[in-house]
Image (tube, rainbow, N blue to C red):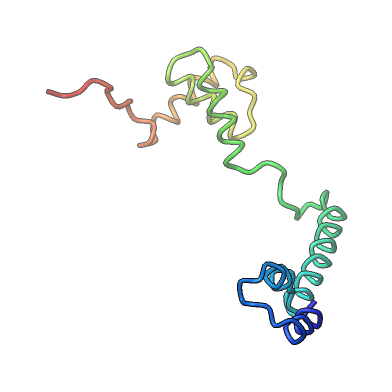
Length: 131
């Protein structure tokens, strides 16, 4: 493309605003850009193949992130019918992988007692404005 552009410039001496010359300038690709893109494409294919080959390895990143898991758990707790304490217990159980329904009444009460020792489990903030 560069050779043809130089040949046209020497032979016809077009003005700088010539549309044909502008098309040839736009079609110009530098060698560095071309080879960088070729190497980048090859590396992307290699990385994709490596990722596919090692997808099930124990060191691989999980499909869902901790943030995604927490978001799902919070949505489930939001839809849960129960007291604030029960909702917190359900959230903690979900985060720890414990099936809430399998807790006995005694285990539930003990879990509430233990969680109430946390400063973060304190009383909820009143939604009413103070005057």
